[in-house]
Amino acid sequence: MISLRGVSLVYPNGVRALDNVNLEITKGDFVFLVGDSGTGKSSLLRLLYREAKPTTGEITVDGIRVDRLRRNRVPALRRHLGVVFQDFKLLVDKTVWENVAFAMQVTGAHTRDVMRQVPRVLDLVGLSHKSRMYPGELSGGEQQRTAIARALVNNPKILLCDEPTGNLDPANTTEITALLLRINLKGTTVVVATHNQAVVDRMRRRVVRLEDGRITTDEERGYYYLGLGQGQVLSG
Amino acid sequence: MQMTAIGTVAITIVLLGLFLFVRAALAAVGAQLLDQIEVSAYLRPDATQAQVAAIARFLSVDPMVASAQYVPKRQGLAELRERTKGTIDTGLLTENPLPDKFRIKTRVPDDVPAVAASVRRLSGVDNVVYGQKIVARLLQLGAVLRRIGIGVIIVFFAVAGIIISNTIRLTVFARRREIAIMQLVGATSTYIRLPFICEGLLDGVLGALLAVGLLAAARAALWPRLLEALPWAQLAAAPVDLRVFAAELILVGAAIGFVASWLSVGRHLRT
Image 1: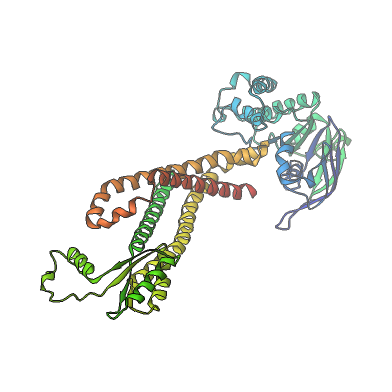
Image 2: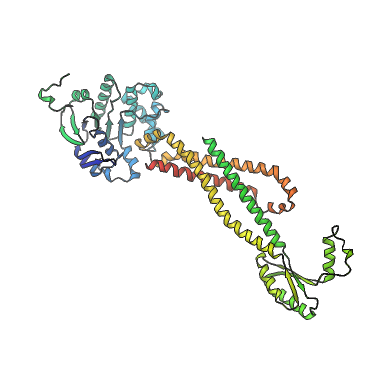
């Protein structure tokens, strides 16, 4: 589903965000991208939805060579992906309903399809009863759920999450992560970049670790920190 | 912010409208004057009947000549008396000072110098007069107006375009968060552009409407006074169809608004 081969990303200011990254993600996978801040997690995700172009290497997403995509084809790519951000990125002057519907409307969907699909995803994230509220009236967790609903409204095959629980308290963090898991169980490939150790350790899924722009480990049922599975305990 | 754009565009179009109107008026007046230019070919006192007949024949076959009339001195004096009645007492004249002449009119004002030159060479002709200096100046004025006109119009377009472009850019900047979110969600550039294009169009059209209103009001208020001061200005009114002119100005406003906003949004989206 997602494939990166020999991908490097060097920013104009000379910073090497990614260095010869090779990664294969199959359909239906749930992958954590972990690493401390600045190790390249966000950069990797940005390459997948073409917010940046790789300096070298090939990137394929659902059969499309994303690195070779023409600029005017990028909107079409993004309509087939769902992206969730740490700061939610909701339109503050639109209601929950309107924010979610908006992602469908920009694809030119019929109103009747919008009327059918939006309640469905709102129900999935548990916000049906708050569809008329504005982001300013919602809690952090509810705003993120709205963002997730928006990301899902076009039935994407892939959901990319860049620190989705970064602005949330532990309770909301658990809720959101559980939601992402439910979404994955329905068949969506989910990639979550995070530096939330607790979540990663609790879920024991595939963990891809990044350090200085390079992938150092890739474990099927991993922990946030290496070697924890062998009984090592961190102090504190 | 929007009011400033509309207001400034209005002023620019008012100036443009005034300029175009004055230019058309000058051109019309110039054309009228040129139309009335008569070439007077004064004959020598000793010109023979044969020479006069030859001149008449020459004039009748010349394709540039529209009409030629022989005016003997007695008729000339009568016309002079008529023209100067009340200002000069021609009764004081003891003898007729005027020569016989041919009154020539050309088909096209531009041919006047050429016709005058050819008639002057005929035998029996003493002098040919047609207000040389005025004609040369009017022809020159016409050419200069045409050339300046295009340059000025381009400048006016550019100014109005820049003003609208800046307003749109401010709006785009103020809404950059929403635009970024729209792009992330997969909206095409055209979809994002649309509301801004509409705003630019509206600014242009409203500015032009305001300008047309101001120009119409100015005309209603000032036209009678202008006619008082310059009676011959009446001639200038005819060639300009005001309704068509107004429609053209509004189209100009819309075009400027559309192009300016298209370009300024496009610049933002590319980054």
